[in-house]
Image (cartoon, rainbow, N blue to C red; front, side, top):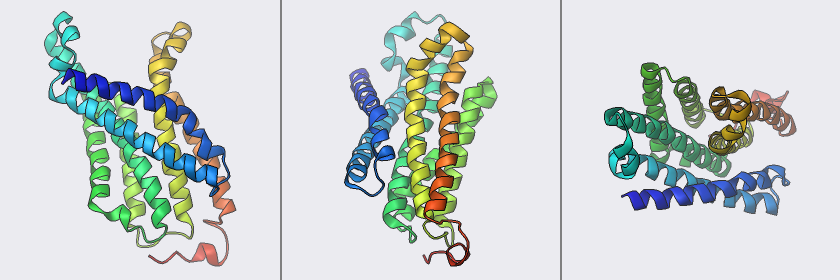
Length: 257
């Protein structure tokens, strides 16, 4: 089991590192062009692999943290507390993995389906939504019990994302070309997840020399803050370009389902 965890973690880190650069190819390329489409597909495949390996790693830790972290467990002064902390971290990272997977799949299907949204209502997508929502609720519970601000902040983000996606999926009608904004929001959201993990794992060691222990929280939150601001600007740009909420007939009528 430990070897499976180590191999999955290795794939998770290598592929995740590649997506840091790959993310920018579809972002900067001409929308709908060959480079955008090909790099976008590659990014989606990589992100799904990153999310699935993350889910596997977390599931293994939740199932048997002693076997996964055998050496650290044996050296721990309080082994019961060690197991509790391992379960908490794994639950938190599991939620983030569901957040990334759900965002990527939702973004792809929103683009494919456009207004009808048939594949967004399939059972596998419902599982993704519910897995994200339930894991976020559990992490919120853990945060309230332990006082972990990080858990509370990201659990709220996870719940809001899940609810927003489900509202779009089950809305009776959507604005014309709203699928463009939905696709954009979901894909940028997945990119925020990649850079959050990178910043938290590597970036915090650079910041900790300057800011101390508070750098850990900043390393987790900085990509979300910056990414959210960038998403707001991008949404306004594409809402104007594609007239998602413009005046006249386009804004007054919803696309048929």
